[in-house]
Image 1 (cartoon, one colour):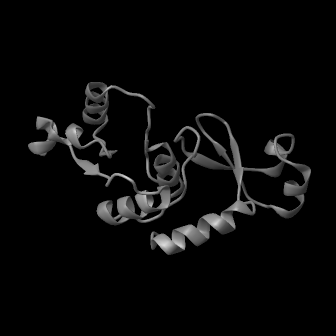
Image 2 (cartoon, rainbow, N blue to C red; image 1 turned 90 degrees about the horizontal axis):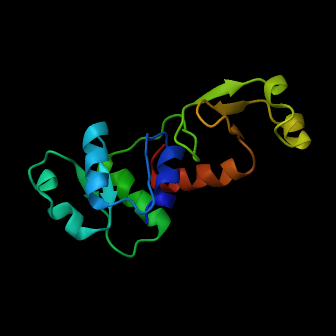
Length: 146
């Protein structure tokens, strides 16, 4: 239920993981092992002792929030400030790439008007600040996360 939220957190530069359908016990074990904050709308999940004792930090999302409301709630609750984005697909770190390195992987028109390209160190996906970034920046401005 938080896959869309995770992608937005990655846009904000947050190291965020998501495993669809993960068992609550496995989620808790994963979060403990990696010292992560658990974000969920599952109320009973937060009744577990690891949350009530403070051993594991969690953020309960109110049920029924739309995606951008989830992002706004999370940004405010966790005091997130946007930094350099991560790969929205796999959470990997992005590094700059030259036009020559990515020329055969992006549309030709993007090579004409775009100067900066980024490649995910993990999944190798290529990113650039296309027209969608205008919309992303508008949302980030509304979230007050910049």
